[in-house]
Every structure is written in C-alpha cells, then in structure tokens.
Amino acid sequence: MSRVAYVNGRYLPHRSSRVHIEDRGFQFADSVYEVIAIRAGQFVDEERHLARLKRSREALELSAPMSDAALKTVLRETVRRNHVADGIVYLQVTRGAAPREFAFPKRARPSLIVTARAQAIADPALIERGVAVITVPDLRWKRPDIKSVSLLPNVLAKQQAKYADAYEAWQVDAYGNVTEGTSSNAWVVNGVGEVVTRQADHSILNGVTRLGLIDIIERAGLRLVERPFSVSEARAAREAFLTSSTNGVLPVVRIDGGAVGDGRPGSLAVTLAAAYRRYMAEGTR
Amino acid sequence: MSRVAYVNGRYLPHRSSRVHIEDRGFQFADSVYEVIAIRAGQFVDEERHLARLKRSREALELSAPMSDAALKTVLRETVRRNHVADGIVYLQVTRGAAPREFAFPKRARPSLIVTARAQAIADPALIERGVAVITVPDLRWKRPDIKSVSLLPNVLAKQQAKYADAYEAWQVDAYGNVTEGTSSNAWVVNGVGEVVTRQADHSILNGVTRLGLIDIIERAGLRLVERPFSVSEARAAREAFLTSSTNGVLPVVRIDGGAVGDGRPGSLAVTLAAAYRRYMAEGTR
Image 1 (cartoon, helix red, strand yellow):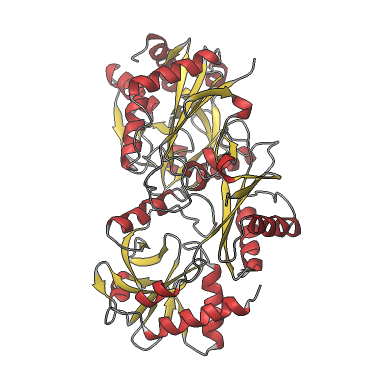
Image 2: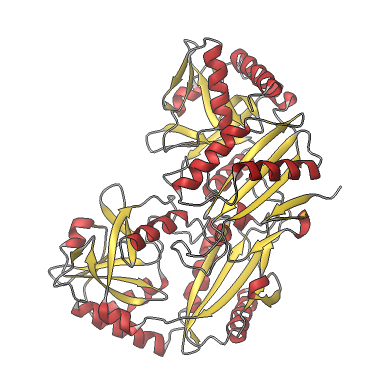
C-alpha cells in the first residue's frame, strides 16, 4: 500500500511529498508539530494535542494554517487514506516559505504537513520487558516547552542512547536534575511510594500522556509530586518509567547501566501502564 | 531573470525547488549551513567557510554530500546561473530524508541545497549611518558554535529587534555577558582602545568575518582582547560594532536605545570597516 501525505492543501503520494527549500521549517526550524496516537482507530487525547499546538504556535506568533475543525478533517482523512488503525498521525506547521531572512516574513502563509503511519502503540511486549535509559547533559534551548522542530540536541542524545544499546536518553540540567527524555517525560517512584515527575515549566514539554497519567494517578488516589529529581535519586529509585504518546507508560529498568530496583519493571509502573492502556481504549477524546 | 537552485544533483527553477517532507532538515533541524559572501564575483574566505562546514558536519557525525572540489564547482555554477556579482551563496547540508525517527537513519544520503542571490555586501551607506542593537536573553542550545539550522531562538530575537526598530539583537548569557548577535559577532572598543570580542568557545559561532578581522587587527598592531564583555560594559563602551559575512564590519551606534559614544559610528570601527572592504577586494580566498 502506498502512503499518502497532506501538504498545503493536497493529498500526495508520500514519496513525492515535498516542501519548498525556503520553507522556514527547513532553513530556521521555525515550525511546531504534534504526534497523536491512533489506537483502534481512535485519536488519543486529540483535544489536548490541538490545545498544545495552539500554545506552541502562539508562543512563536505563528498563525493557524486553518481552523481546528478543518484540521481535524485533514487529520482524519490522512489517517483514513493510510489505513491506520494503530499508529500515529504527525502534523507540522511552519511559518511558510519566504526569501531567507531571520525576522518573520511579511507575506508568507503557514505550511501544514500531515502524515500517518501504522505502528505499535503502548506495545505490551516492550512494557513487559522494560527499557534501559542513559543520562546526558541537556543541551537544548531554553524553551523546550514549545513543541518546535528544534530537535537537533534530541537527535544527538537519542543517538547516544542507541550507541549505548539504550532506548532513551534522559537529559540532565546544570543542577544534576533530570529534565526529560528526548521524546518522552521521565518519572520515578521513590522509597515511600510517591510518584515523582518534573513540574511542567519552561524546562520540559508538558506531555499529553503525562497529563493523562496525572489524571489517572489522581483518580487512583496515588501520591503525585511534581518537582525536579536528580540522577542519583533516579538511580536509587524503587521504580522508574517514561511516558510518551507512542509508548504510553513504559517501565525503565536500567539507568546508565545500573539496575533500577531489582532490574525488572516496577509493580506500580506496570499497573499504571495497564491503566493507561485502558484509558486509551475508553478515550477522553 | 528567474533564479536557479541546486537541489541534490539538479539545477532547478528556484520557485519549484523542493525537499522531501521527511528530510531531516525539515523535521529535526538536523542540518548545517554556510553563507559565503560574493564580492565583485569573488568568493570571500571560501576556504574558511568550507573548513567550518566540515567542523559543523563532523560535530554532528554528518557525512559530506560530495568532495570539497565538487562542492566548489556547484557553488560556482549556482552563482554563475544566478548572475551574482555581489551577493551571497547559501549552502545547506542535511542528514537526508528517512522515515521519521530521532536517531540517525541507517540508509539516508545527505541532502545538499545551494542557492545564490544578489545583495549589497558591506554596504557603505549602512556603515556610514551605523545601526541600533537591542539586548535579549540568549535562549539558544548549548552548541551554537556548530552552524546548524537550529535557528528558532535567533529568529525570535531578530524579530524582537525588528519590533524595536533595531537592526540586530545581541544575546546575553546567564552572567549578563553578551554572547553574539543572531547572525553576527559582537565587538566593543573600550576606554583604553582595546578591541574586545568574546572568545570562540562553545558559546558563539566563530564567524569567518570575525577571523578575517582578527587578522587585520593583528597586522595593524591594534590591541585585541578575546573575553566576555557585559551589557553594561557595552553600553559604556567608546565604540561598538558587529561583523558578519554580509555586513563586513558594521558600526553599532545605539544599544537598547542608548547612544554608544557620541551616537555616531566610532572612528576605529569605520577604519576597520574600510580595512575589511579592502581585505575582501584583495582576497585571501
């Protein structure tokens, strides 16, 4: 089956889907994006993704390429044309194509690109095994709360993880505290059973899965603490896990080569992973 | 006259020059670039630009799209086809197009895009007037010494300058020291006649014009000091100026609305601007 992409008003064969060389997404990383999970044909937390897209756009004074209603139609049509039941839809908005100057162009119209592909979402086999993470210095710009395509440091960190046979890299700030993964939020469970994750300020992206899991944790009456935690606290934690749209809740069993707890997925992480899979199935979308 | 661009092996009409939507330059800012000035048909400091391109590529483990000899041919052919006598040639190398994953793709081939356009280089009218700058927090990632297209913070800062009717924004680190402009290096001349500019470590891009000017300063027997300088030192400086490939040496006459010296281009800055124009004409290329 050949894939289809939406590019600035047209559905095109994916292989021949292109943007102009002076699109500001290509020359300046002047662009924002979202990745929304599709689970059993349903969009997971679409409203939260669209709200975050709006927030990212507005932080950059980047106007909307179309209304949310029209955007939802394009997302659905792209998913339909690619026959995705479980997978992701990726959307990217840029400030458009214009002669190369750093300041905002006067006349450019925002570009919108949408793709979709099938892939496992919150893969139970991966959850059962758990994954290894490494820690690396956080080299990113000071506004990773804006979901822009300024992802070069994330790319380099993820590649470091790959070289170390790890699944993800947890980025560490100047104080030795974990900010987040390259494409996921970071969590630990400490010795008294508190679930700890960094507060959503300018230093991390406020993950939609993070927010969904916070709802689950609060409804379950578990103790949630939003604060920075250090690498050494993470290494000594009872449990650790990460969250992302494609992974749901994924146990972390090794940090920088050392076992977390007994080196197997923690019981609370596994419980939360199952709860998140139910949350996706029930849908708050 | 219609413009021509080089895109991955082909010379195409500029208006229809495109890259794939999954080019990593577009989705991850996984890309480096150079802008080389063309002055009276000559490439200014081409070897230094190509050496810096190599350095940027290697820092990102990004392989060369072609040999330097072949690249020079493409640069010349693009300049020729666009009839540029005074202007710039822009070249961008990306890690290529591949299904979207953060880590380096196994099979992608680097993309190479080259454009050229006519524009004033080291414009004497601008040098005679001088320009205003504002200061803004430096929000960039921690490796701006790599000339990547991770330019979103630069875009936002330049737009702030535009809103303030200024020409450039000088970015300021956590210690109150100026790092550099969004697309230029920053310099001051202090009360004892020392020319001060920040040392080229990981915190700034080591400008090719910066290096050319250092040669000129040293040959002239002037006193050069490479160290950080603060915003307040800059405001109280005898003179200030910026350097870039397109501007050469450009006097700064206002910082955050306050006059530098008597508010007119400083005598040393004007002398250095003229010397740099001669340097371009004589050529060390």
